[in-house]
Amino acid sequence: MNLEEKKQQVIEDFSMYDEWLDKYEYLIEQGKNLEPFPEESKTEDKLIKGCQSRVWLDCEKKDGKLFFKADSDAIITKGIISLLIDVYSGRTPQEIAEDDFAFLDQIGLKENLSPTRAGGLASMVETIKKKAAEAMAEPEAQPEAEAEVLTAADVKELAPLYENVVLALKQVYDPEIPVNIYDLGLIYEININKEHKVHIRMTFTAPNCPMADYVVNDVKTGVEDVPGITGCEIDLVFEPAWNTSMMTDEARVALNMDFDIEDNSQE
Picture 1 (tube, rainbow, N blue to C red):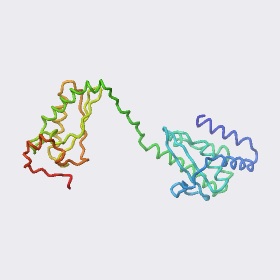
Picture 2: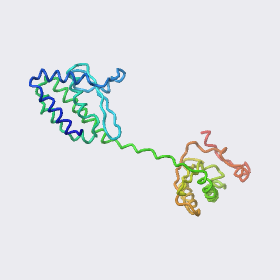
Picture 3: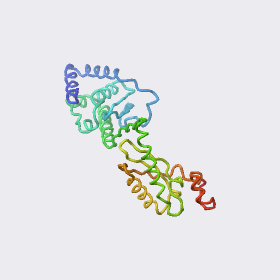
């Protein structure tokens, strides 16, 4: 049932009663249908401000729609918030934010409430619309991409490409140290997907390396020049911090173990 149909149903339900005493009884029965509201959830931040009675409202966004839970310590107020939840829970934020709530006037609810209860009703409506506006401002969560599953055949096919990517990386040198970035331990991870696109996680000996952009560009260019590679993405990270233990034996030999390199892991 869409929103307009639901509001029309409420109007028709109320029209069945001639006396407001009977309509109050109807509201009380509505309140009894509220989903139980856990006592531990009745916190200050969920209280609707402006209501004479205490009214708690909780809101959850799921699959692009808002779902409300509520409770009150007064039976009439509980019926009113139950009526609002029955109409608006499960609607999109935009539907709620753009609605005029005019059906409340059509059933005569506002004019037949005491001034304090009418003020409380206005606060409930305002809070529900505020929740909708806040939800509209939130960025939609993007579904997590499924991890690509590589078969044994895929791995076998990619092995030569992986080796050639490593060879390309060994042609790129740190501008301050006479060792290629691969043997220096600056390459943390190399992944090649089925489309032969490479994803590399790498670092530098220090976060403030002035030549970082040039080295990253050399890595991207060198890897993309490898026959069969369709592209290269690079994530530059500094966790975990690089330290001298990450160097290969070849790097240690090349540096004669006398080369003074700061171990950033000790900072």
